[in-house]
Amino acid sequence: MTNITIFLDLRRSDIMRKASPASKLTVSKLVNRNIKNLLTNDLNLVKFNSKNCHIVEAEKTSTNYGHEIGWQNYRTYFDYNNEFKYMIDRRFFEDKNQKYYTGLIDMLVGKYKQTQKTIEILDDGTGQGNFLADIKQILTKKKIPVNTTAISLSDKINAKNRKYIDRFIFKDAKDIVLTKKYDLITSYYGAINYSIPAIRNELIKKYVFSLNKNGIGLFLFTEHKRDADTKNLNFLKLLEKVGFSTTIYKHEPNTSTANYILLIERLR
Image 1 (cartoon, rainbow, N blue to C red):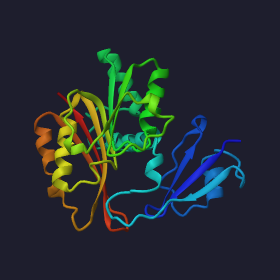
Image 2: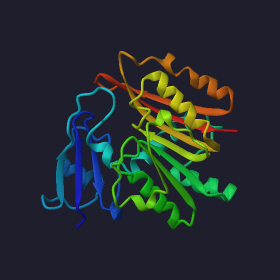
Image 3: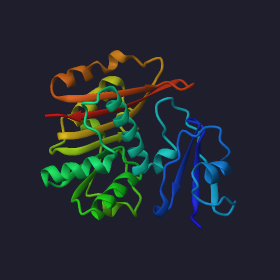
Image 4: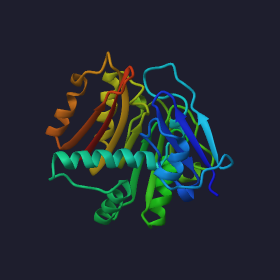
């Protein structure tokens, strides 16, 4: 029987699941569901019993800017990939001429087949390093060479994940000078999330100009609703004029924050 831990983040009212590598799936956006029914009827994952299911209540945070404690420490490839697929679907729905990918792996495998060059991935605010460890193992099994780089203000990377991360940068993101190009740059409530709009926008620009052609940037962040202003993101229109495709989704739950998902692809 697979051991499962359910992380319930009270601030987001979402249910997050961290399971064994053999059965990793993401459970999210399932609000006010009975957990027993969730596991047995909704997803058909495992038979529910109290011995193999542990409910962990994520610690509430006092800040309105992001998620400092709790679920984000356990985010995995599946969390990143779900956000990526949502944005790709949204982009394609708005413009059928846009390239369509079934997921991050599909995008990166396709890129390798075109270039025959090692895939370069950068994760800003990497937490325990689960995402980089996951995606490196998946690509390696597909015989795709990949280098992974982790950016974090402090070293909280899980010891088991360290061997899958090729480069560590423990430094404030705004002080980092990137000297190479990447095929995928992600910031899943990383430094971008904890920066004021002016610095956040400069970080986004630094990251996207460090993408290879057809490289993807995936950025998730929040703003307090009193600060949420589309004018803060006007620079995206300038990026589109110099060879980038941008897609942004803004979600305003019944809280004090507005949540953003930003997908940027470098077209040339």
